[in-house]
Length: 369
Image 1 (tube, helix red, strand yellow):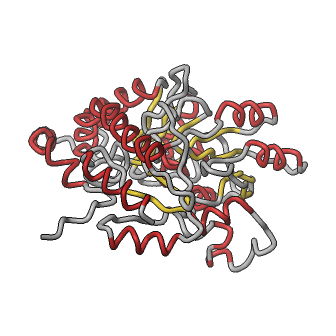
Image 2: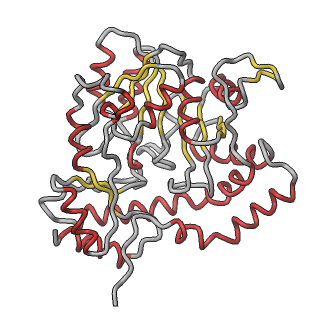
Image 3: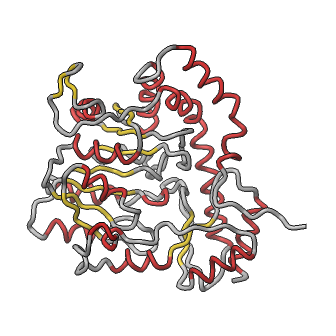
């Protein structure tokens, strides 16, 4: 008798225990007659702002819109330069291009995937104006955000935190991802640590003017109904049903994150194979959206894991500056750590509903490689 493979993720396992609460939330919205920008969106905006430790939250349709509108809300205009990392499937770069801005790629720190402050400092020293930087808390691990914010603000650069994989991550002093820069963007795609049953996003900020501008931009750039004064607006609104469901799930987020972190830290303690580089054991600054190892023989490792009943995935195999859409524009650019990661990173199963036995199966499969 063969056992089912250990899945990389399982949304059915995640949603089944709260199915009745979610059905009730959806039914309440249906009966209310409010479907767009109604009381559930307003309530979730208050709840999520309080959770993140910011006075303001503006819900939008998805995480990429959140990044784009956050850039515009902090003052990025067409032709401006925005610094981004190049190791996360063009999310930051796509938002930058959608805002009409120019991408400046920055390399990452070895072993963690987040922006290297020294490489960012080099961009600030090159003498060309920089309007903003997107700091991505990749894989659920917070970047060196205080160091980057300090340098950026000293140079007059606005900071947008990309928190799409870091809901609830917090520094040792309790400040959460999204509350440290000038704006934080979130995705509520179903696989995220806090995921809707559809798409959704949010912008959080401590600046009232940024929140006001973001709210105007999400609805065509209206300053009043049918009066479009702000260029760059779009139709980007979170549905009432998704907001109601997210309100159900938000109180469970810290518990889910704790379980993710327990799984990840067990991997880091127990995977003992010199061919597999594991991340450090981490605390609350890591919410283990993905558990990513590095291996020079990645495809061989993937085949071995599959043969041992363990699913895996590569996040992400193609660096942004090597994507075909750029048509060779960045051929002369070398991002050594980014390029090394693209060739070696591999994600192992990591989600709250993994059983201890499944975690053990993953560990054994890695150690037998």
